[in-house]
Length: 275
Image (tube, one colour):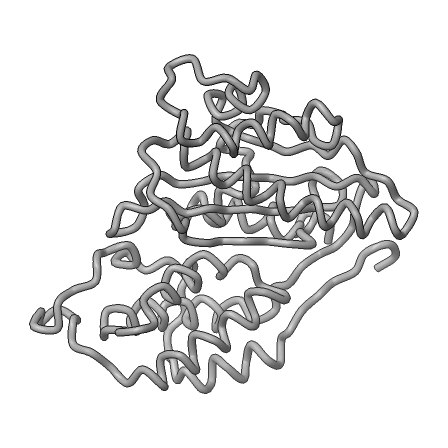
């Protein structure tokens, strides 16, 4: 198809699905118990420890695919990787759900067809998502506003936050740090990008970043982060733009979503409408 690049790993997908040995298919990689806190080894519902080597081998094969051609499975894979030290049968059950989804969608891939050469960063975060009360960051970078991503990140946050505003602020700080490197690459290639639009769905976080001030005074411990983001706006390197959560491409990277939302977001993330 003229003007479209399709990135798939069909044969690799079939290979790892076969290794996983799944027989069923699923319309979502998110198992209902994915976000359950780790069960004790005495729990008969699935807390028994399993062979870590087998778990890691399957997990990393899925991670390899997620990072290259299938970002639609990245969030559950990253969540399960945070439990890789002592995986349980419940974790393996959730991992098998990912492979069941892959079994039914082996032909999916990224459809790259930019409507411009301008960078856009989509940043989202989920507050208090994990059992230890940490949040989760989701980042999607696209060339053109709506396009398959050139970069995705789904990552458990490394610090505890005390509100959704703080969680979003941490995510935005991490996204812009990465963005600075991408801007340098584009500059070297002769495609200057500033200011880059950074999409946010949290108005409170945007207000703090755009003013460099916290009205409530409850974000003093975050002052370096929001002043960094405020400074990058003052330097005309980035600009924040509000987008509804229903249109936030990074929403899929920040948490497991139900299958109806998942189906809609995957079509947008992989840019399937451009086929």
